[in-house]
Amino acid sequence: SGWRRLWKALGILLLVLGILEVVGAASGGDDWLRPLDSLRSTAGSAPAEEHPEFARVKSLADLERALTQATTAGRGAMFDFYADWCVECKRMERNTFPQPGVRTLLGEMQLLQADVTANDETDQELMQTYGVIGPPAILFFDRNGLEMKEFRLVGYFEPEDFSTHLRQVLAAQ
Image (tube, rainbow, N blue to C red; front, side, top):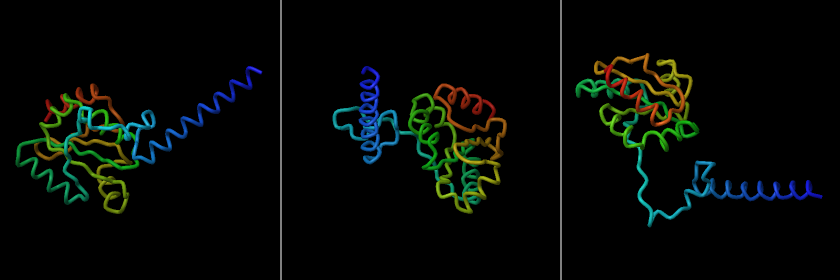
């Protein structure tokens, strides 16, 4: 009957999709909507834009040193809590940070990042000090090294929204 054929076709389609997802994940892909992106040859394609470099921060002492350096340079700072298992963190790195407008604005401040993938005691102390439950969370510091709590972000933001927020932060620093 027609229903039986429909269900069989749907089953075959889902099986093929599942196989593509497994192959993509096994080859290092991390985007379920484009599972085979990591297999694509980069020889003939334009290089993908990378997100800006962040200075890694592990402990409160590391953060204080980095904020002192930013203050000495007369710059504000952006402090990003990141984890390898955080899907929204990966989306920010893939979709938001590489955008030219965002990169330009990020270039005006010191970029700091805490990789809390391990979630060890040091990571927990850092998150508890700033009241961060988990990534993604982005804190902003002014030119005096003080947190600008009203500009704190939690979750994923599209490039346009993030750019607008960065302009507001830079104006307030």
